[in-house]
Length: 165
Image (tube, rainbow, N blue to C red):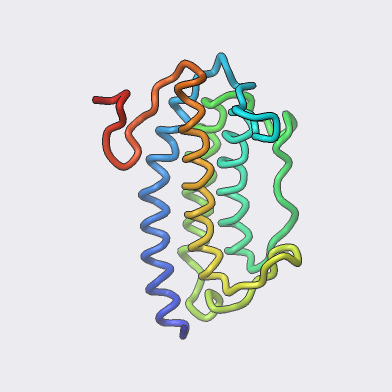
């Protein structure tokens, strides 16, 4: 893929990510605050852990793409300051659009540069942008499956849910 093609693909992926952000926010907002320790299995993240993971790693991945290098993932312990869904929504609304704007500003030539993800995967930046949306949607899907067992309602994601009809 040449730099012009990479920029065209990036514009599409950025618009898609921006569209998905609204759904991600709806899901995070719907998480019942009274059951943040819920997890369906002992190896699963808690609901709060997933809320933090989505919020912090969406920002991290986008900023690492913009920087052209991956740093260590963010600390998702209590030290991150996200203690409930409202904290996550506030941070997401503040940080993710700014990170997405940074990615939007990347010239096509840099989108084809290979980035090393901590020695695990080496791909062009444009591929990591595609991965960023998939990562977010994947964990949002996990979180949405927690809702009903937690006593909450699943918001519409790609149309109405049984809870929104």
